[in-house]
Length: 215
Image (cartoon, rainbow, N blue to C red; front, side):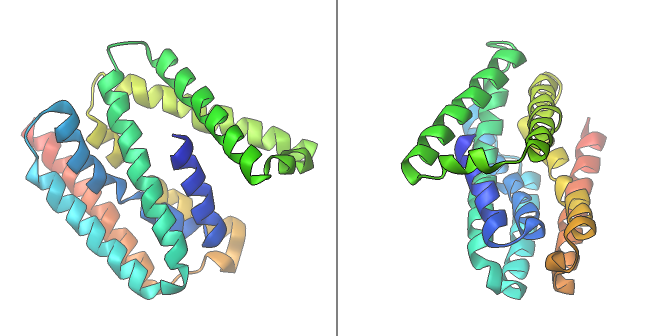
């Protein structure tokens, strides 16, 4: 989780929010490959096809937004590690409570990142956070990070990690919209970016419909 967080914010730092959120959609492909190995089930080829569609869309984004190649690279790494801990969360569910899982992950991530920032010398930057920003960070960390993660682990009682990641992949939709409204022109992308992002979201929705009809 700590590596996932680190790559997420570094991707935003070297590119922008829209690029990073688009890259997170590739988590679908990683989960489609990792989940059958961890849960020892057959590969669902519809998941692989969906993952390939999303990867092709990402290649289009990479081609049109080549100036953000570093951000795309770290964004895809972020998606890979996010997929990895999502699958293992599903594996751990049932062996211990959701509260225990999220507590270990968050405090473990906090410890790893603290050690990392100590070695890089970036830990001093925390003292520069204003009191107003501190409360915003606390709100984002608790209500918009810890609580949704707790609920996502609890939901694995009813859905698979792949289905959960599909739902999370809706984040680029509202994330890109909010990023443009908040940050303005710095988030403006090539039209192909928006077309490719729309195809990714449609593919995700189609997969959900197909699986619902199977059941």
